Each structure stands twice: as C-alpha cells, then as structure tokens.
Image: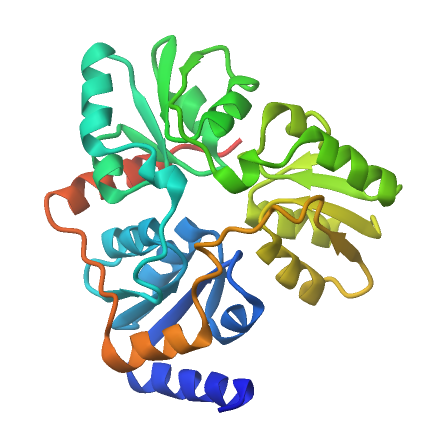
Length: 304
C-alpha cells in the first residue's frame, strides 16, 4: 500500500470512529501529516478536551496519553505505539517522590508535565517548559522541589530568587547536546540564530539567542526576520519548521538529537490503533482527579 493511500485510509477511518489524531512535534513527518493537531504534549490534550471527538489517538509517548486521559475523562484514549516511553518520566516514581516530600516538610513540589499521572498526583502543581518560571515564582516559601528534569530546574533557577531543589532526571536527548556541538554548528552556519530548548544543559543555554519550548520555537522562527536557525531540540521539529517557513533554513546542531521512542510510531501503528482500539490508556481514580488538580493549578498561574 502506498503512503498516500495509507494516509487517506487513516483519515477516513478517523472520521468513521469519531477520532481525533494528536501528534507531538517530534513525530516523523508522515505521522504529523495525518494528525488533526500537532504541538506540545499538554497543549494537544487541552485542545482535544475541547473537541466533540469520542476517541483520542495520541502519537507520542506514554505520559502524553496519560495526560490526555486525565484531561479528557469522557474520551477513549489510545497510544498509537503502546510501548513508547520516556526515560525522563521514568526517573521519578510516586513512591520516590512521597519519600522525598517526607524529608522536606512544607516544601512545595513542581512537576514537569513530562511525567506520569501518578507523579503529577503527588505534586502541588505542574509546569511546562514555557511557563516554568511563572509557576515557580507563584509559590510561597524560599525553597521549591522540582521534578524530574534537573536541566529545566537549573534554567528556572536563573529566573527566581528561590532555592530550587533538583531531581536527578533529565531528557537524555537534550542532555547529550554539548556546547562544542553548538559552537561547531555556529561556525558552520555563520549568522544563524541558535534556538535552544530549556531541557538543554546550562552551558548550551548560555550560547542561545532564544530559549523556547517547541511551540515557542515555532512562533519565534516564524516571527523572526533571520534567514537561518540552528534548532536545539529533537530533530522532529525541523519538519514543521521547514514546512511552515519556506525560504528559511533550519539545521540541527547534532545528529544525536533523535528520540528513539518518539520515532517508534509509524502510519501503520496509527491505523492499527484506529482499527482495533489497541493501546488504550485510562488513568484510574483517584489518581486522575489529583493529577488534574495539579495541572489546573498550573493553568491558573498568570503568565509573564
């Protein structure tokens, strides 16, 4: 079967099943092409909740499907590739967070949305890479525990007087980007702006012309008058950047910026999920209610 026919069949079946297809910005181009919505994980779930679709097919990793289940309790959520995971989300468990909280009485916990529903449920409030600074500053007290991404916490530390207590997790893809990689890319592409994700190491962020979430990168590059950009995040984002900005050049600073879990999902997996209902993700109560509360608290924080 040709790729074009498979895409048409997926769109036909999605309509028949009353399904909405969500694809994270790091998915392969063909999967992004068949999606109803592409973007950051949380924004996709929020938008899906506002639709009338009965079924959500998430092309991403497991914690994203969990977030969709939490925010779309009336919908059936399917993870297109059921074994697609996230090492950063796996770096913290509900039990390990409860134990750490017991050692830090009164210290609020901010958890990155790139985490399991069970961990969100043990947290005071969630954050995204776009609003982490606002969320941290909104909390009372001199100290805040952040999970699970130490690099995101180090980024937020630059924008607050609070003491941020770090967790040991990180995104292995962003964490392996080095300052030497960026300097080499800048030398190879003089004049190009370097746009970095907050999950990168501090020494990498020091070299950035702009620090943005993936959605923020899309907006920054669209609005910038620059002709060339070095994109410091997973290479999947290059596809929509190039598609939406004809005439502008986008390069990756390293061939290491590939997430193997994000690349697991193919068109065949999307079709199978739609056709068979395989990969259903349902966050049970009361975990879903508590995780939803942490997300809703985040959404109430005014943005800078």
